[in-house]
Amino acid sequence: MKLWLVSRTDRIGYDEYDAVVVAAETEDAARKTYPSGDLHIRWDEEKGTFTSTIYEGRWFDHSWGKVSDLTVEYLGTTDREIEGVILASFNAG
Image: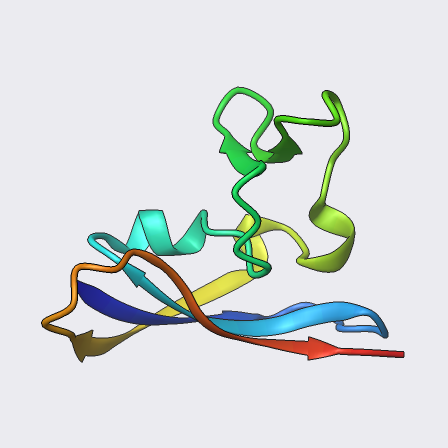
């Protein structure tokens, strides 16, 4: 599994994530991983944003920004087969 640092490049406010370390096979998969690790929030290709599988129609870009405003940096690999969020940085207000 590969490790990626995903960071925002836009303006970051209170109660928002600014970066996350993700274990994912591809850069694209890392970019489309929501920082909270919430299993009910998924990337929706059709809408081009994160949506909730529980609260249909609710969008979650407010605390993570737009996927187009993210940079993704390859950090290395791990021998563990765990996929998803390893560590997230959240600016609590």
